[in-house]
Image (cartoon, rainbow, N blue to C red):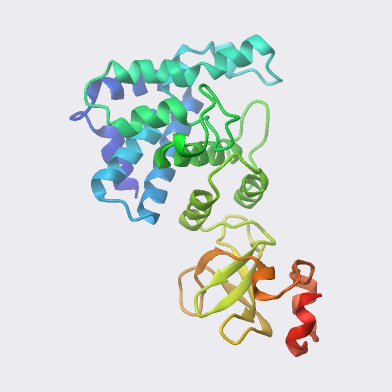
Length: 288
């Protein structure tokens, strides 16, 4: 992963002028530069999770690296302001996707994906984003992924106006924000970073359901409580598992609706599932 990021950051073949703009951004605002490199890394990671080709992965990485170039045109005092922005300041910040797009559009060799992500990484599927208020199918997959990677890194970074959130807190919040992110792509992103919202019921390999638990140590991959067999449609003795990819770990496949398996959502909590009576309940009782 680090080799690919270094190749992208150090590349001077495809779009040297854009990379010079990145270096100018580094001189202007160190945080935005480091944020851009982090988003580059996250975009590469999720592109690989989605099975993109190496050429596409490279373009996704460039899109992440270039996505905030428009911050070059935002007053530094606004970028560093520790308190809330007033309306005029917020309007200036909201102009950065268009400014960045204009910079990249004048630069030879910039891939279309990078132009798209730069202009649209603050758009939302529900149409409440900016600068154009695009929604639904008007947004490309790359732009939707750019929004996810951008917000995740922003939430998990220290800023003048806030402390960094833990990965699990950030992911849980993002999953709860209806309409802000593409849910399928957000779940793919979760799989790429190995962090899932605490309390989420998930489909596992081996015809099982699990409940996501908080990691014992922040930064570790999520833990899962395996509690149900979908093949036999019956509860099983709850067992702890990890998503580490090592022996005896489990693979999270998708979010699951417990009601689709005849299980009342209120039963899907750690205390109840660890109780002695869970695995002995008749199937009919699971509906609550």
